[in-house]
Amino acid sequence: MILPATEAAADAKPPRIGLVDTMRGAALIAMATYHFSWDLEFMGYLQPGTAETGWLKIYARAIATTFLFIVGVSLVLSSRPEIRWKSFWKRFGMIAGAAVVISAATAYFMPGEWIYFGILHCIAVLSLIGVVFIRLPLPVTLLVTAALFIGWIADTFVMPGVLDSHLLDPKYFAWLGFAAMPDRSNDYVPLFPWATSFFLGMSLARLAFRTSLPQRLAALGTGGTWLARLGRHSLAFYLIHQPVLIAIAYGMTFIVAPPKPDPAATYLRQCNTSCTVEQGEALCRSFCQCTLDQLQAQQLFTPFQSGAVKADDERIMALASQCSAQIEPEAQPEPQPQPQQ
Image (cartoon, helix red, strand yellow):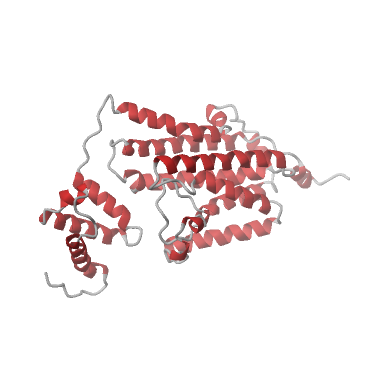
């Protein structure tokens, strides 16, 4: 039986699309530049919290979104005309094994912020989920993609945190993405909302195979560039690049010593980073500046920074309560009476 052109194309093994490899390679370079900013912060060249705030925070999220989108596209490409199970399980084993190694290494070196569910963990789990959806009708995948996208919009812009619950804060639930206050981690990429970009990549790739787009993209070439070659070895690059960058940042300390951080600026940055988990950014700026002023006025700032005075000290708790009361009127639509000083 002679198949129609569209069905024959769907059943044929797709040509290698160099553009996908090039995009993956570009994303790897972007990831390395972001991680180097983290390394510079760790070595003292940047203020604490720099890599987690401002444009660098947006940059990091854009990189992760791009990676997961490409993973979704690549899963579809590697599963046509049918899933090659041997290659799939080999790839999954490498990713899952690397995720375990990263968790173990960070738990040893950074026990307070170890990576319990980072980008590799997310890719491994989404690969298992994705391989199921590839075998389901396309409308099912499109429906899930739409639901994830709507949920992300609602949780981010319409009613922030509406899907979160403190019951899901423990690590064994936090990987789902609905924790109200997940434990700190140097790389936290839960399934929600990050599965959105993965499913979007799968959906668009499956839709593309109903057209001649894959053949046209393959005809563009670009598979021989250094970015494309790098993109074909993404896992090896991911595992190797950070030790190399840390070594470079460490070596820099012998050439140009990092500047001594401003204790007040460091306090404000750390306070704002911690506070904005639960409160608005404007409210946190006022609160943190107020507590800094009070700590300095009462000559408690230096002993508090050194640890001689603890956070549960009555004086610290009193000035925190005082600052909370002082900024309360700013957060309300109507003026409120000031508390007695």
